[in-house]
Image (cartoon, rainbow, N blue to C red; front, top):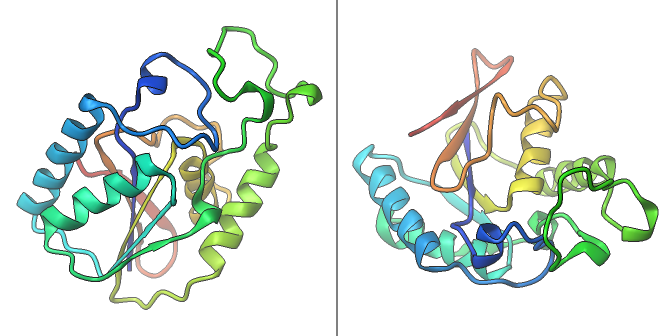
Length: 186
């Protein structure tokens, strides 16, 4: 079994370094081009998916649809609210600033522990067989939490050595049925 993690294409708020969280911001033209290019590269590599799961937010859902349409996926795309982006509380819509204390309780950000718990709950809803290739299209923060869960905690949430990058796919695969190995496809 392989699980592929794809972050949605760029939005204007990504470009402006704004906290998006649960706000339903669409991809911009750059994001659409990123997903067209990503779908082309996936298709050229001969990768197909047996299941696609997406956050229901527009930026992720449109990304999932573009990948599905351009890689020969004919099944339905499952939407799952547990794969929605981290709740950024009162910071949603504001510009990120150096030195901002994200643990300040008044902001109401979803904690990293809660985010990782939600990622585990989201993955736990599904039974995947060994011969499946699953694509999860979502958002940077929740996909980092999914990566932490899939690594069984060996990759810390904040570890950037295994990044979640727009326009790329992180492949997660069990090696010899034991340890999960992570690699960027492109």
